[in-house]
Length: 236
Ligand SMILES: [Zn+2]
Ligand SMILES: [Zn+2]
Image (cartoon, rainbow, N blue to C red; front, side):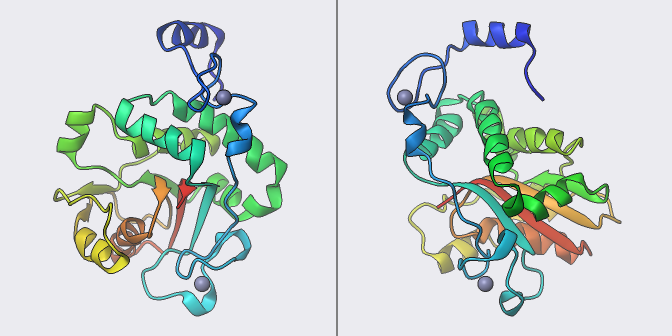
């Protein structure tokens, strides 16, 4: 998981890290600017109210919805800037630093992440991601959710598997209300994995309304996958 010395050294020469907030060299989020990150409390992905481990409340569960959601930080301040820098400036090495931080968040509060960690370590669980459209990937050069899924999978000693394909280009979800987001993303994914998968963790960078991830979950459950858990670095 950890970068070895040589890779680390080369990376730092090629891509010196500067704090996203204050510009100091060394880390993307320096120790002083760490105070601008806030951890996201676990909530039910259906109603957004507090829930143990981020499990969907029994009363909120509707057919083919996510079974739960794990998010690490609130999507604001320096975390928002970090995720935007990955997506729009191509600074995807920030992901590695965020993964190091995520490990320390989880170690500090292991009870909150019990369910997620047990899924990560479950041999029946496949790690996958919310894909961007292949044209967008070609244009951007990478898929940030795929990169993130690679790192998350390593934590569980796994390799991520692509289970979904974006079959059409969708309008940006930005500025749309929840209903418009659901319509915009409807039928935008198709299943490209193998049958006989039991459980999945689906990875993305940000949870906003949840429309995209719930739609991915629906497609996964349509093919018979029993349990689908969402993971995002940040939650808006
Ligand atoms: Zn700083
Ligand atoms: Zn609920």
